[in-house]
Amino acid sequence: MGEEQHPRKRSRQHFEAEETRHISLIKSPRCETAKWYFSKEEIERFSPSRKDGIDLAKESFLRSSYCTFIQRLGMKLHVSQVIIGCAMVMCHRFYMRQSHAKNNWQTIATSSLFLACKAEDEPCQLSSVVVASYEIIYEWDPSASIRIHQTEYYHEFKEFVLAGERLLLDTSAFQLLDVELPYKPLAAALNRVNAWPDLATASWNFVHDWLRTTLCLQYKPHVIATATVHLASTFQNGKVGSRRDWWLDFGVTTKLLKEVIQEMCMLIEVDRRRTMPPPPPPPPRREVAWAIPAPLKPPVHMSRGYPFHSYPLQSYRQPGIW
Image (cartoon, rainbow, N blue to C red; front, side, top):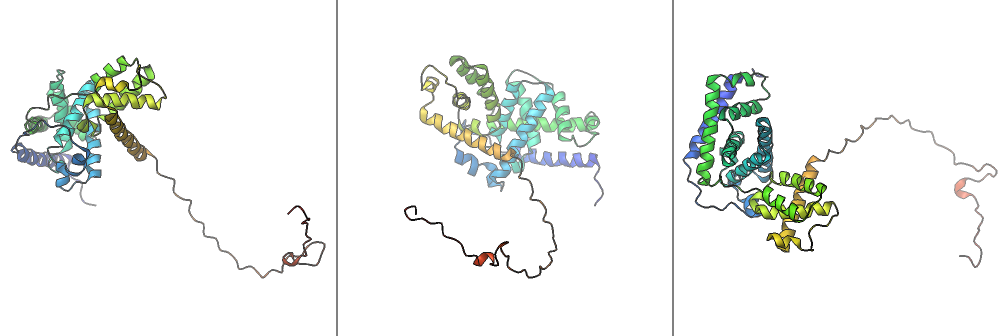
């Protein structure tokens, strides 16, 4: 094994690599369109990461990684779930314009949460964001919580967070600040259909999960909220709304509702397979040394001298029965 690298050198190399990435991306052209909704084919086949050789499975893993990071960072900073959801959507949109191969997801996720606090009028101290993010990134290093309070490391990481914020705004032409989440449409839908407590809880949990996926890049918030209520009521064998096609009151057609619910069911199935425990390994084979048996004489009936294979069997077939 080689000599273990000093944490100070390792973190500086990380920052130097990040600085190179940020400098190359800040010069990229701004987004010229406000199109933030994409087809499934655009997301899976034509994302910027796909052009840089990152396949769908790898990008899905990175998407899950930065969403988990944002959730942990938001809980550490005690911000609302709205801030956390807004930051996740910002990251999703950013990586539909920029590639994972050129942008460290931990830096972008940190900057997204800091920017989301400003967008939702819930300001958070930059120093708190920098310290909390650094501690999560380097949680494997016991000295990280002490090192980040040193002036040199703090200012270095702070500059990268601010550079990531400028990059987010530059990439989106300052349109990332206008993020609509499914929370308000969901609350309106639950109130209108007089949802019972269990249905409301299941619906809120579903929406939290959808924000970790690309559904917010495919469908508008009110569509996600309406489909979520319908899916949750289906799982609970309940009936909502005063009429059968109640979703039409929310501007969602039956065709669109079926399409969104199909996507949701596929995501649930993928997550179920991912979290399913692996099958237990087969028991080890025992090597048994078998002795060569001696030739046996054919068995003989106890009361007759006939072997079993030549024993004269009496016919019990009676006429008229068979």
